[in-house]
Structure formats: C-alpha cells, structure tokens
Image (tube, rainbow, N blue to C red; front, side):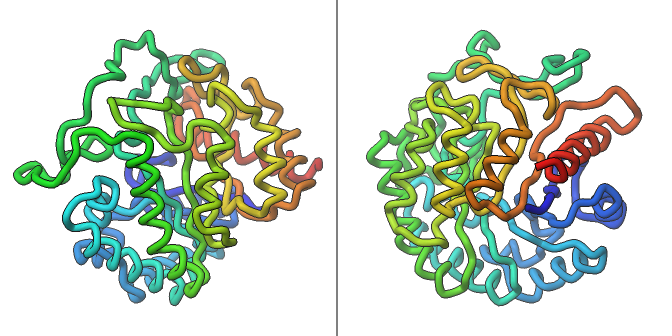
Length: 343
C-alpha cells in the first residue's frame, strides 16, 4: 500500500498544487498525489468542458519532477456534468465531454477518476472544537440548526447555482428511482470508455449518509448500497472511492466488514483514511489515533484482503501551532506510515 495526499482549492494542506506543497509531501514520505476538483488555473482546458492530454501531461510531469506519482483526479468541475446530475437538457453534450476527459486521462497515464454522484453534495457540516484537546475538526449534528428538509433550489448542485437564469428542464428534487436512473445512465455511458482507456471510475459514498437530504434521495447511505452501483456494470473499472470516514458513520453497517468485503472483491480504487466518533445523525472527526475505530486493524484488513493501492488522509483536525493543517496531516501520515510498517 502507498500513502497519498490530495491537493485542491479548499483542501488541506491549504490549497493548490505548488512547489512548497509538493516538497512538503515528499518530505513526509508521501508517494502519490490526488488532484481534487482542478480548476482552469491548474488545467486551462477546464473552460472547454473537458481536460486535454497536454494539460494533464503538464501537471503530471510537474508532480513527477518531485518523485511523486499522480494517482487520481477527484471530482469533475460542476460545469462539466451538472446536467448529468440534474437530468437536464445538456446531459448528452456533457457526457460526450466526460468521455473525452476519461480518454485523455488514459492517454496521459492517470488511471483513476473519483466522482461523487449527488445533487445536495456534502452539505450540513459544522466545524468546531470536537477533537482531542479541543482541536478544530468537521462534524455533523441534527442539533446544529441546519434545516435538512430545506429543498434544493432549481438548478442548484452542491450548494451552487449552475443555471441561475434558465431553470427550465430541471427538477426541484429527485426520488430514489430517479437518482439511480441518472447514475445508471452515467455508468453505462462512461464505464465502456473507462475500460478502453484503462481508467478506473471510483464512486464516493454520500456524506452525510442521510437517505434523503433537502428533499432529494441519496444513493450510498449504507455500505451494502455499493453493491447496486457495482452491479450496474460489473467491471474492474467500475470501482469505489472508499471513504472510510463516511462509511464509518453510516447509521448501520460495520466498517471492518465493509473493508473485508470490498477489498476482497477488488472494488476499492483508493481509500480516504480517517477516524471518527459517533454515527449519523451525530458524529465528528477525530485524530487518526483517537476515534471509534482501530486504524491498525483497518490497515491489517486492507492488506489481508488484497488491497494494494493508495491510502490518503482526506481530513485531519487542526493542530494548535503556526501551521495547523500541515501539522495535522503530518501527524496522520506519520501514524499511517508507522502502521504500515507494523502489519
């Protein structure tokens, strides 16, 4: 198994792909980089609705220059696929552009594309002194005052208005059958191209794992729901962005059993590795050595059941110092490195 780190605006460690952050990753012993939601500053071809080979190779070569590997890209820009999510009138044009992106990723040798098929997206989190020593971290609570039944406005995805001046053709909300139908359309169009390009499509579960959020159904809110997604097109290239944190705070199901099941099935493309306390509807994120779950046991299970890909700490609490995010990540990566040596 290898250790990864994600870079992207709004992510930790603070932001974009640059020399300082790549040097930081290299010094910590990270081997693989995941690009999260790259924009047109990093990949100028984003403005065309797809990514070109030249853009992808330029970024890959920059990462390689630090002795690091570009393992995956995580999340399409909303402009590339909002009509696919909303079943809007432009979905056929957008799906063809996504095919171009996947084809170009294969040509560039970037072999995993993570995605999150959701309209509400990651919504309702709170940020507070939840972790050990009152360290700041993410949490979710029905007591936090968020209106979970607030409907999603027409033409909005992930809390952002994607068609503010033209909402015709959009549904305010979508039930479970509609959402699975949209995902099935996406996978049946994209996975054959992914197979040809040898790029694994990796699906993220719903965060928070509410069955309905803002009057719209969620798809993956129990670990077993992955089965339905994987069975739409059984293929090595139809896989999982296995967010251990999200899975661990699903109201039902067992994280350890899920690791065994999907690692043995060879369905895990890469892992978001973190620890948490509690379950939906009340939980918070902790330091990796201080939650409800035994991370060393998790690492042993990944190894025992055949997973040999990238593990990345996607979130960590802040550490009280001048570089709170970087220190938090250093702590998590050090723990993972020691854990891998011990199993």
